[in-house]
Image 1 (tube, helix red, strand yellow):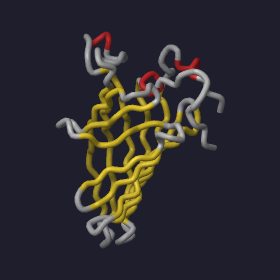
Image 2 (cartoon, helix red, strand yellow):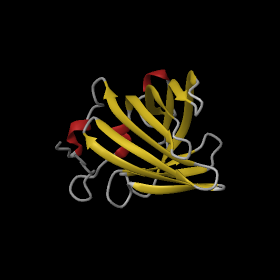
Image 3 (tube, helix red, strand yellow):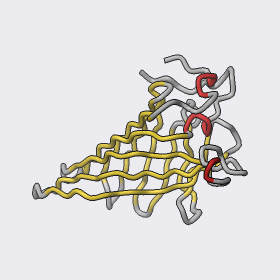
Image 4 (cartoon, helix red, strand yellow):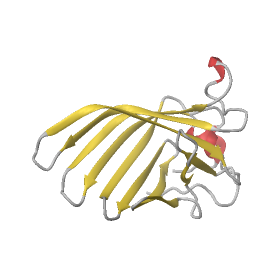
Length: 180
């Protein structure tokens, strides 16, 4: 099922939807070699400003911190397994619409746009010499997924991720106009 964020009706607040902790289940496939792996962990979207008691609120400018950590497991072409801790961080900043956030690398370089509506659920990022295409899908009020199709002379990868909310949704979440 593909439950898109509404393009009409009540304004969809992507920041409010994302706030909190999410379980992460990711599969990764190197289509060129047939090798693959997975990642399991937790992703936390939190405010970037305020005191410790305010970390579940957006920072003064509405930005959110994206912090993911967990374990990656990969089986190489020769069958040798690799397992290690893994983490990554990004910064999500408000865009010209509350249903879209712009994602940035920690050093401030732009990465891509994130959203669930028809006009914002697909984007691309050029990482010389390869192209990364992302597609976001809302599968329910407490679950969403995204996939990266990475192609070019250096890479041919498919990366699929499903996120499920951990714990109760933030206050006001149910008023966002979802019906699963």
